[in-house]
Structure formats: C-alpha cells, structure tokens
Amino acid sequence: NLSVLVERASLFEEVEAAQTEVQQRAEALEEANVRLKELDRLPLPARHLLPMERYFEYRSPHGAYVKRHPCTNMITSRGCPGKCCFCSIHTVWGHKFRWHSAERVLEELEQLTGRYGVREVQFEDDNLTYSREGFKHILETLIHDFPKGDVELLAMNGLSYLSLDRELLALMARAGFRHLDLSLVSSNRDVLRTLGRPHSLGHRPCAEASVEAATGAIV
Image (cartoon, rainbow, N blue to C red; front, side, top):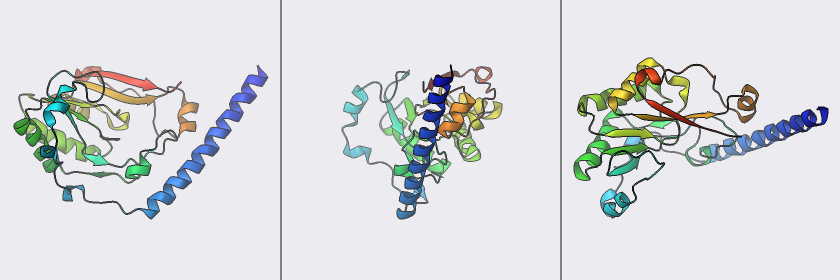
C-alpha cells in the first residue's frame, strides 16, 4: 500500500545520504594517507616466524570449501575502486587498485608449495579480477609452472563478475580454480544502485568452464 511505499522511499533516501557521507570521509582519509604504490617492494610474508603447522591444523582458513590440505591464504593486490556503501575495506587499502607482478605471485606460491607443502591457496584479495590483463598474466604463469594442477585455488572474499568472460574463466579452471564465490549482493537493480554497486546482471558462463559458483546476497 501507499504507506509501505513511502516508508521504503524514505529508507532509500537515508541509505543514499549515509552512503554519501561515508564516501566523503573515505576520500578525506585517502588523501591524508600515503600508500605504497609498488607492492613488489614488500618482502615475502615472514611465515618462517610463525608456527605454520598450527595454522595448518585449522583446516578451514576462510570458508568451508577446502578440498586439499595443507591450506593457507595469500593476497596479490590491495585496494578496490568500487564504492559499495556497505564495504569499509577502502579505509584500510584505499580505492586505488595496486597489485603484485605475476613473478612475485609465483615466487610466493613456490615458497608455499615447496617449503610448506601447501596444496590449496585461498586468495584474500578484495577485487582479485579487477585488473583483467594482470590477472590473466598471473593465470598463464601458474598454468605454465603448475601444469599438473598440483594446487587448488579459491577466492573466498568474493569475485566481481564484471570481467569474468569465457576466456578468463577457462584460464581460471586450467590454473586450479574449481569453485568461485561471486559478489552478487542483489538481483534487484534499484538495490544495486542504492548500494553503489557498479554491476550489471549479465550472463557469466561459469558452468561452461566446469567451475562451481556460489554467491551471497544482502536481504
């Protein structure tokens, strides 16, 4: 009825106002911080200082889809250009997308598999596929150096599906991705607009690449 519609319209206006305020504060914070532009300048994570065997005992670092053990996490990029009103990661990494080179990613993976015997890696990037060509280069490097599919790969933080076409999905499957978590959030265009999601609802052929897909939604 009319009262419900009025209430919903008011709620959307409040969300949009809050979104604008959060965005303004985030931009002010980003201007005040100087973040490292070249991530390859960072050394490999000092895992040798940690009791890695104890971390491996916890058999599900992020999510419930672990298929191979030992399993661990890594991150190949920082930042996300998205301005989703419900996400706060830009206050940590900023909106500017920065990434490690494919060679640096491979170096860390070789350390994980060679030194620690890791057989599954969960990427914790907030927008793993944002740089399509950069990610494509990483996948091609992994296919070349791990041709037997020795390592299972996952992206547990959720993937933006804007760049997931047949070519990229096929490369992901060959590189070791068997399961994808897609950041759908909502199938309602008005909700996506209100939340600041820059996504269309087009078809993404995950099944054709023999890759399982799951998603989450805000209700």
